Length: 256
Ligand code: FPP
Image 1 (cartoon, rainbow, N blue to C red):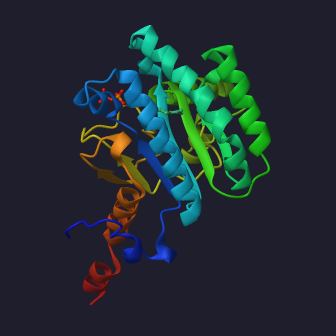
Image 2 (cartoon, rainbow, N blue to C red; image 1 turned 180 degrees about the horizontal axis):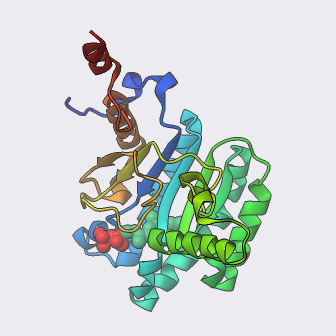
């Protein structure tokens, strides 16, 4: 299929939207490098893309959007870049909170945000509290998030419960592990989008994406548009999700 401007809008089936979309927003640095700009300008452009994509998801009626904004490994970057990302987060929340709230967007954070600068923590708490009763898009921002650390925390909690006699090992199930994760009460992502072409998961939602459809584009995050999002959704709608089973045609062949 040849992509034209705004070509995917008409192709989307409104009754088969992914309930939960997760995004690894990669390529800010490369976008800036191509333009001889500092990396921070790439992140600023990335923030503008994020605004557009949250709005697009909300308008489309997507139920849950989860974005990977800062990983536990991102602390290894130069402190100037980390500092800029923290300031951008504050700027984003301050500037966008009113529109997000008006659009019934509910903000949540996945990850341990207690180790972020105090000003970030205050802005996050404010955004969560302000939007807590909203009924529209659930917008999860993964901040200081690492999936292995999340699973490690779940294992430790369950081990603690066994040690205290609260549960026995036979009581541990997939559901009881899921309940220990930041994503408890949230269905697993249906679609994971990664921009900037890398074929890896980078410690993002490892437990939750067991049956998620992956869509990777060469497009750098600051250049990602609503039509790219619609392209990913269209592609998702062409897939045959079998969750390890058979589709109905194959099932009929066996029954014949
Ligand atoms: C990866 O690009 C991107 C990040 C580590 C940060 C994502 C942040 C934003 C999109 C900014 C806005 C976010 C908020 C919540 C305000 P990279 O720097 O690894 O790019 P590269 O691989 O091309 O160097």
